[in-house]
Amino acid sequence: MVSQGMEYLLLVMQELSLARDLNTVTGIVRTAARKLMAADGATFVQRENTYCYYADEDAIRPLWKGNRFPMDKCVSGWVMLNRTSVCIRDIYLDSRIPHDDYEPTFVKSLAMVPIRRFEPIGAIGIYWGYLHTPSDDELKLLQSLADATALALENVRIYEELDQRIRDRTIDLETANKSLEAYSHSVSHDLRAPLRSIRGFFEILYDDVKVDLDQRQKEMAQRIFRNVTFMENLIDGLLAFSKMGRQRLSKAVVMMEEMVKEISENFQAQEPLRSIEFNIAPLPEAEADPMLIRQVWTTLLSNAVKYTGKKTKTCIDIGFETDNESTIYFVKDNGAGFDMKYAERLFGVFQRMHTQREFQGIGIGLSIVEQIVIKHDGKIWAKAAVNKGATFFFQLPRSKPLSPVNTFQG
Image (cartoon, rainbow, N blue to C red):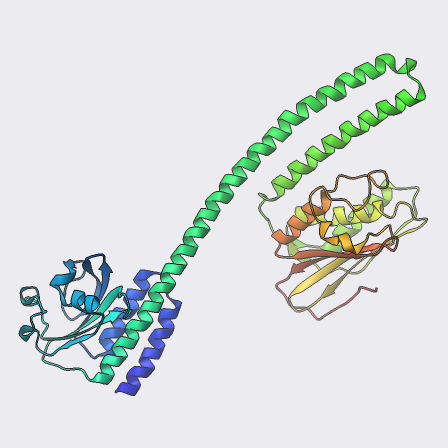
């Protein structure tokens, strides 16, 4: 009997280890306690300051579920105050029992153990409708159940605290997002308006006086135009970056090879005087947001075209690698590259590896690309060397396993 009880107790303890709320714990314990002791009833008692709250029960007839009794007026209170178990064969011969409360019930014998023996937080009560004395081994099983219950309740408390922290964090994030939206609105309107005024009035002024300007003055005027345009681009980039964090994914099957070919053809059309060679491997499809993934490819290919601008011949390789869980796409160029010791800055907002004089840009494209890839549960990284080109990799998970393939050379 005891060995069977031990096997059952082990199963119950596994259930308790998975419990995440108080109702689940009380439901498991009330049923397990009664079955473990072959009893007619079981109660789950919680300590509430100076009261005993009979939170739940499993019995042949109703007992005290939902009632509260003073600690010094019930046997469960005696168990918790004395931090010890009790076994009473005949309840009407024991002064610790409030006989009037028990008289309407079926109870003749009982056993009760504390939940947590130091500073008890509750008790488990077992009742029989006949005179009965459980064995010492049975009481040990019941106390083991109570000890496991104490651990389960502590887990519940921890999970509740974690849930509350998550809820608080969610509120903080929602507040931060609202602040960001307000900030974006301010950037969009409060900064754009004076920039438009600066550009407009300066163009009027320049048209009026340009015939009287010398070469140095004209160069200064052009520098003003470039800086205003650069500031406008910074504002556009900042707004795009802030919106990306709030944008939801709308996934579909994306034919990556077709998309890359279309984007590369557009770049070749935009640079008719350059010798640009795109080597595109047969790319596997992906489950992704088509618009956002197009932005990833457009940014990576645009960077490859830009940073190979000083090469006599531009070579850009697009391929992929696979494993059982993901596809890794890459874009490799033979351009300016960069020093890998600065790689941690690569995806930072407004971070650049080259000066504005060397290559135009505001340093936000890769930050947006990283956000997009992370939204797809992927990651992005790069390898490069100064004047030896750069290779950008981005990894996307996939649902259908494929045989490993590698088209990356070098």
